[in-house]
Image (cartoon, rainbow, N blue to C red; front, side, top):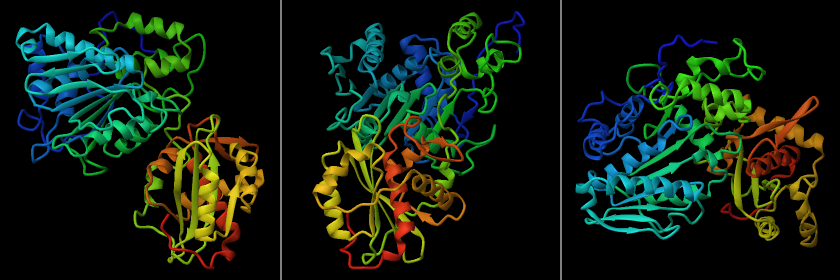
Length: 505
């Protein structure tokens, strides 16, 4: 433990993990300087050092004058001033940058409305800004601030319908860790597709195994993170950025002991500073020490140290390994009879997935999720349609899992299917992983639903073997259905060549 020296301990201004800029950041290459001036000289705020640093990096410009980061992921512990930054960016985009529509959302609508209300209060307190207000809509669920020139700051619900029909320039996604499905992300972020200067800012503290959206985005953004100093090294997608204030990934894995002693990393003040850039400014060591003494370890790790718990930051198949076997043009020949795998989400049974696996012309195995929808009532008719079209070599259903509820319906529809044993399932799971990581004989087309399931899939140990854990992961039915399809294909590949329909699903 690093004991207090009696001097004020300040949080780190620069995050541990961050995406390097394309060029040296100056007022000509980043609008962050202008946003800081707007916040401090017009609104009258006093920004913290980390907030100034982040604005400069977050609002970096491309060579053509657009925003470098179309998507930015910002991870920092609770109560460090994330909401204030979102308010500053939203208002600056409206008043100075001329953004037509700013959309604020959070998993809990109350949080998004509170952030919006804080921004409105700021504007109303500054006469020259207040004079530009045309209208303020205070209706619950429809709150909006409109300026005389037409710029709007609107609150949208984090749902599959939130933001649909809108066209947004800046989308602020707060508490992204709470997004456990892709519904809200798909609805609100696509509002920026046709805008000339779009940006999606995702703010959160660390998540857990259910934080499927945050987990996936963080992994994608991690590829852009470079060594300390210097400029971007050209790796990863330059339009996504990561800025994460957190301790190193490997230092807090064995500290779950009470009472907290000098040997416990939770009590190391170096790590407090790495996760809490507002430490010494608006957060005190006493406040963090009190939280450490009263919080369960997992709560302290997530909320105060911005460390993932119960998660899979190192999944069975990493993003890099999965990307190596991605081929967007992959397909199964029309004359090939693929295997089909079916699965249903656990425990709510609110989503279902159907996948196929089949041999490509080059001998590699193509896996693909051909349908993934809410509910289960659509599955049997869709399987019948695929059976009549593809003449599959086999249809695989784990009757011992949640998809077992489909057995009676499939039988009533005269659909023949195989029922793998638990030994078959564990063997098939191991073979699937081996085909991705070692032999690299699987190919996929980079589907979001399958990639997201893999990025957050945990293991379920079964003695000397294992399979995908439903309890330790969010909805992974796309992955399970793909694994079942792969197992069915490997078992029945000798039945593949027959008479199939055209391969358009």
